Length: 214
Ligand SMILES: Nc1ncnc2c1ncn2[C@@H]1O[C@H](COP(=O)(O)OP(=O)(O)O)[C@@H](O)[C@H]1O
Ligand SMILES: Nc1ccn([C@@H]2O[C@H](COP(=O)(O)OP(=O)(O)O)[C@@H](O)[C@H]2O)c(=O)n1
Image (tube, rainbow, N blue to C red; front, top):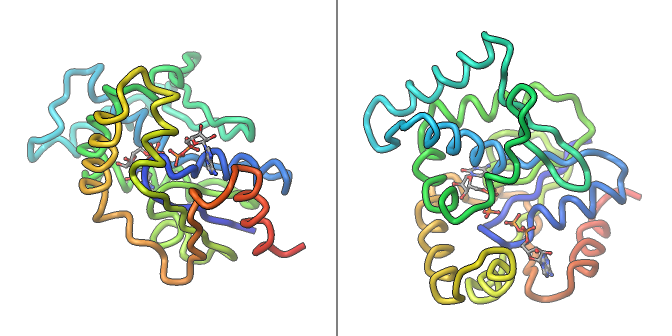
């Protein structure tokens, strides 16, 4: 079985996916964490993301690591996904304001989207995949699809607890990222839409579970 959970930034995708994955006893895959890791790699290597050759250069960097036996890999742990490169856990570097600000510029590069999609499509179901285009593009065959949303204010109030920034700037950054991510964020036509501002996290997880086969 494949289940997809897509939605806007800080709508609760990872937390809901983790809760549902735990209940189903299957892994969840955070596609956003792979985009974040590739963005981290680009910044570490001084790649400029807004040039015509950026996508090709970034893809070469990632495949070069692969060929040297040091691939960037998602570890889809149910309690929280990680990304490792060889023996190094990069996860703590990926949820920062710096990556938040740059990730959408990397995520529009077709070569990076192909690389992320290939990583995910190479995995064996059952799993739950979360991101922006999991239901619409990457796993159109998924048995159940969900689209999570909440107002920018609700999302900013949540994220401010995770980032050391003020509410106004977090909300402005979320809205900007929504705009920049709009192209790949259209919900799948057959997704169930859920407002995560309408209940607590356990209630939203229960709502998703109620749409899944017993
Ligand atoms: N009702 C709710 N539904 C989903 N997440 C919630 C809810 N209430 C609070 N949160 C919190 O919102 C934060 C952002 O959720 P997260 O899963 O990181 O979102 P995303 O993966 O979409 O960026 C988390 O700390 C989560 O626990
Ligand atoms: N399937 C996906 C997942 C993420 N992304 C990109 O990766 C970024 C980070 O995604 P995320 O899910 O980790 O972050 P939040 O939106 O949860 O803050 C998004 O802002 C998009 O630019 C994407 O383009 N497609």
